[in-house]
Amino acid sequence: MTTMRVMELPAVGAPLRPAERPVPEPGPGEVRLRVEACGVCGSDHFLQEGGFGPAIRMPVVPGHEAAGRVDAIGDGVTDWAVGDQAAIYYITTPPDDPWAAGGRPNVSPHVTRMGVDVDGAFAEYVVRPVESLVRPSGPVPPEVLAVLTDAVATPLHGLKRIARLQAGETLVVLGVGGLGSSAVQLGKAFGARVIAVTRSAAKQALARQLGADEVVAAADGDPVAAVRAHTRGLGAEVVIQLAADARADEQAIAMAGPAGRVVLIGAALEPFSVRAAEIFWRELAVLGSRGFVPDDIRDAIELYRAGTLDVRHLVQRVRPLAEANEALDDLVAGRVLRSILVP
Ligand SMILES: [Zn+2]
Image (cartoon, rainbow, N blue to C red; front, side, top):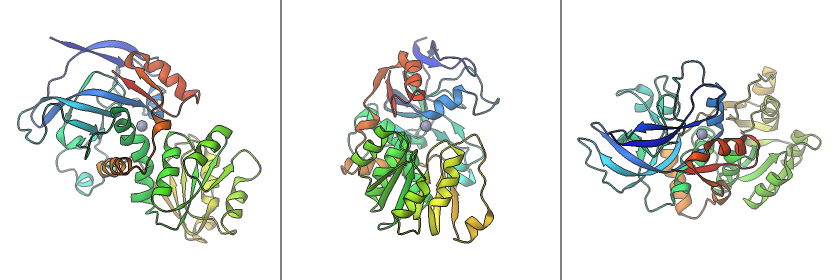
């Protein structure tokens, strides 16, 4: 039997370790992909810390932000050929799942997540059902295609499908990390005026470079007052909250103007508090946005190919698969927005 190299998580709180696994064989309706790039994301750290709960079977191979090339084809697959490039949607749902049928597989209670519930792409190969593949409309560098499947698709989902951000609106982006940096660019791509709010001077500079119209230093003074000053005292039409900080959840709600939409993505462990009148007086919509759907990946690919998105800051750090622990350390220490593993 031929084997492949993976990096697996043996237990909650443990470092990843190299391991060998049998090269998986595609079943009917499935293909095997040779993984060309896999992003290292905050949710890989969340998995390692036990954030997904005790039901996760260990050891598990993380890796959900991946792109690859079709390497072998299962029975009944006619529309994919060996060598085709694919972005991988990390979620699968059972046949006839009503949420998937309604275009929202991400919220199905029956999701199976690659890199969480089943082995992921910190590996040389993965087997996926063809429904979970997205074919780019033209060649895309593998490391770019990988980050488009999560670091870009997640804020795109929040802005386009959840908040329904419109051209001419003002968008506040709270937190300029891997997702927030994409949110700044996407806001501009959708024709909004973008106010970025972030603590570090380096991220303030990045937000400016990515096109933010205004940049607010979150640590200086009152960022809510600063956003109001940039919005004629009214607050913004849309606020997207990407910092894992309950105080930022409260600030996000306070930054929204009349009839504003507040999108919560940053996963703070602490609860936040707000008076109901804060929400109903301005008729705010406080919205959750969870991950993304395949159409978000397609949209991200099109924006990249049109030259509207610049993801160079997300793909600067490329490492071999064996350096997955170092990549996680870099992410947790804030030394990078993303690292890309190349098996
Ligand atoms: Zn992720």
